[in-house]
Image (cartoon, rainbow, N blue to C red; front, side):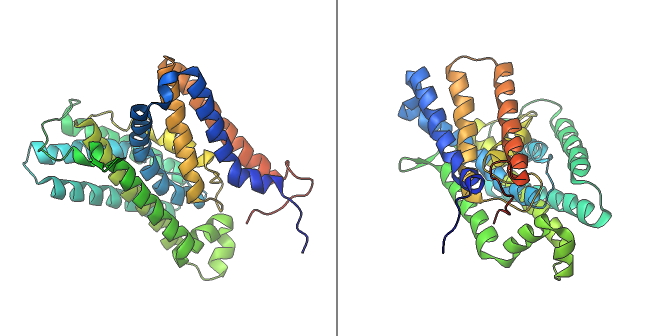
Length: 324
């Protein structure tokens, strides 16, 4: 059976990998230090937190929503978990479990507001972003918290063989995300609701439950990312997750997840996350200013979203075609 080549689908699925290779080649030529093993391991550790949180926000984006609160949840985890260990003497395992359960509950609250009250996800998560950031400052008084028990740093700084432990956590989370979306009926529900909410309702899908679950999962994975961040820096910082949601959104959009919902692959998110990590690291090696880095990331996000919109309009093919 003769099938016509669809450039839009092909580029959307595999073009990200070509862009990643080209970006690596550019920085390798521009800076000899880029390909040093120590630098590559540093990139891997840096992107691990981004990759973990990206899986969580992907569920929200698949529904056509967004979760802007993940950055402040990362900050809140840093302060709460650090405070429990240092000020109250909690066991690190219990402190981590409590912190992740806390962010999962806050994600649930986001989901209930979006699904049951009908509030726009942008407004809900923008409000909770501000709330949790303010709570974090109140709890720590704007001061960092440090002095953690020995061994806690292994989560963010340790190795198993030659592989950084945060990277192993990220791989497990990515695999979990792929299993949920590709091998479970809940995964099909996310795509169905994001593609056509009314049709999903008519087919018997509990749309409110799916939306609530999406934001709950986003909060859960944001909590895990916050624990990894805390362990890596070994200090609870009141600005730990500031702007983190922007990097996550950029990585997901680069990975081909549609910002209007209904389409996305966790496997491609890996490449999007790596591109953001390489871009940040490469610009630092080239001694570019923080503001230049902001401009670069803004341009990257604009291009990614523009391509998503243009591909849906059928610009890259003579005939419009639905993306499976």
